[in-house]
Length: 61
Image 1 (cartoon, rainbow, N blue to C red):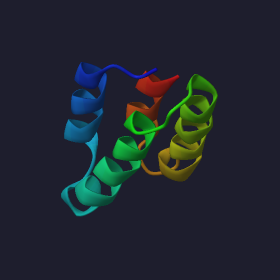
Image 2: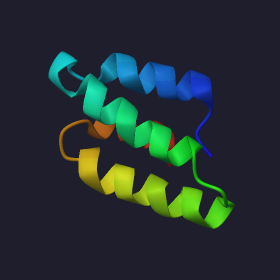
Image 3: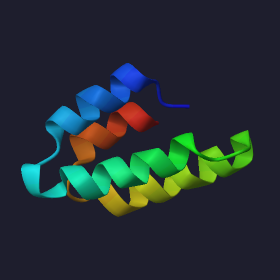
């Protein structure tokens, strides 16, 4: 699972126009009840944002 400090550094790397949407996606990961669901949300996050912020998504792997 992605650590909070890693998420903060990822958010600093995202563009201003995407911060709110990206933060919402991150919150979904933290609110999942199981590790399996967390991993699925993490994969979805990477697929969604990897093209635009590939440097930041490397931290999520």
